[in-house]
Image 1 (tube, rainbow, N blue to C red):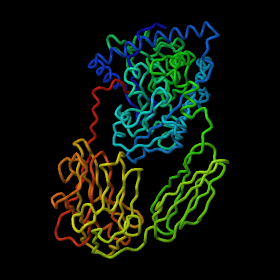
Image 2: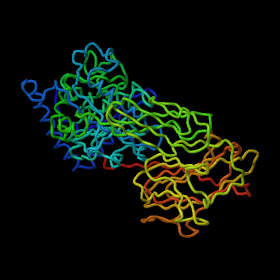
Image 3: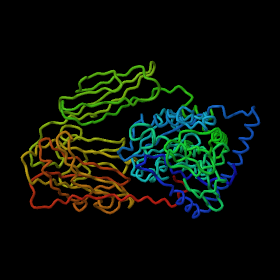
Image 4: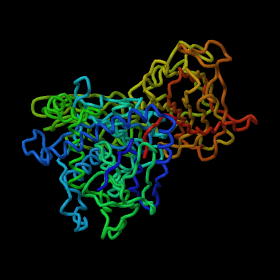
Length: 632
């Protein structure tokens, strides 16, 4: 194949999509234009790319000619992986099981074990490679602590999914492959950083994937799961199969360009030149071929599931190069440091459940054991107030009959180690009847936010709603979230006691709140919902975000309202669907780096002619990234 100066960067539009969501290759033009605007970055990347290409060609030739090369293409390279799930409490917050399945299908693709291998066109079966590359979930964090290899971080950046998500968390890229799972990967299936780019900008090293392209179940499927392996190919220095990027002129060929120069390709000798495919046409032929390698992992087809021997050699060379430190990933010392080559200790008992609030005897709760690491030989659950009260199965289902807040305890053993965790007030069983209206709450007599009067649901590990006597609209007490000192962009719910509104009409809910931002970029959000019995129906009554939420100007120090003008009053009508027994109020605060928030003086009474002034405010997503040099 003819050789050209290779790509500046990986510009990856993973066109491994369903017909309903097929993406085009327009990201290439955008990123090349960006490089033209950043000549110093482009210059550095070009230099590294030339060095890597020279090393790659010499390495491949040396391996082919010298069987005594210490690390050959027949050895297995292991790469530690850490998942960073960047979510806003939506479907993008996929399960551990889906993440692990995503890694499993990548390994099956790289190790020639993909479930659809039997469909590979006969002409390419002889060069279908077992790449001898495996990706394993890290078992230790950068500080040597036991870890699950999965981080979950709440951030609205999940909706943009560009390089900025890497500012939230980024483990050392010479030790780990950082994989970010987001709601929207910059409008693409995913994007990856090439070694030469990562060597120039280490903080951008890693892969970003839309959650719907990870794994074969959950929010993804077998067809879309191929995007992950495609991105791993770019991470290990593979071009798209059609190639075509001339660095000096920033020239490139988009996928399926019928005017493509077929003398320019992907620098891999055994992949036939092609214009590239955006559908699974197994008889597709271009560039004078009898048939194209449509199923190659680096194409944009729906069935790109194989690597060739030539691509294997190129990725092996990448793993032996110092460029971006890829040669350190698989070293024994690093595999020990990341927990891959050690017996994983049992370090944490943990669990989640499908719900934390239920009505007595009307619904059950399913618990899921998420403890790690190692192999569990036994476990024991304790469910105060639940039936059964004890269980030894991994994912038990429990019912509750008496209103109240209850803890859950999980003990896990692996034969020698024992770990225990208890989550206090984890299950809240609601009353089926409610207090009478008018309902008045100024928090002067409330002693706990985890009882039958009020209930908090902390959806993160940061600060949550708490009683405070440091500020109040009236009296001396209100509820607040210490958002100023929280390092987590969390989401926290606050439920009222049940209130009986049956038979009522013309009711109005009123409350006061106080909030400040730290700076003008903050998009913290406060919402109020009316909820029918047992959480059946949620009706939004108030929604304010960013500057529309603040009641005072930006505060650089911790905010506490000190005068009545620091508080804002809100009133909203309650529609008929909410006028039932067992009605509750639900406040939700979504943090985004701002200051403290306070709520006080909540009441429900008949209307006095006040119109429904609920503020339904849409959060416009703005995510320019003028210095990005890679997307796909």
